[in-house]
Length: 99
Image (cartoon, rainbow, N blue to C red; front, side, top):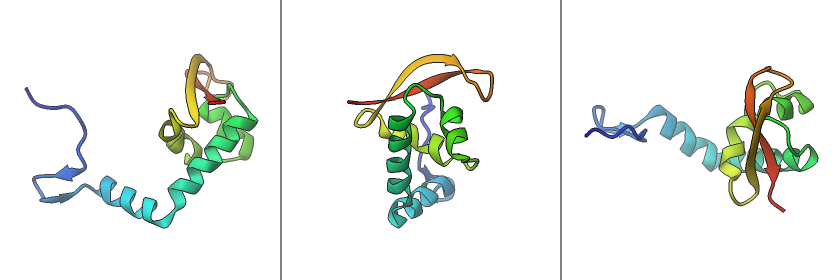
């Protein structure tokens, strides 16, 4: 049975995928850590909001917050219940700080 898990290595080209390379570059620059800290502080300021609602609070349109939220689970954030998002109108998960 073939695995459906995404891989960071492309065996056909014998190299890391472009996503893996980009991740390494972002992690090395320290940008990801700063973005995670920003996302955690935003959730602490506005608990129970969806990713789109959080980004709307700070005028973020580049997805910087939403990309980092899941990376902060379970140490700093937790996923809450699903609710209709005030921005998109779709059912979306809410985000809550841990402690």
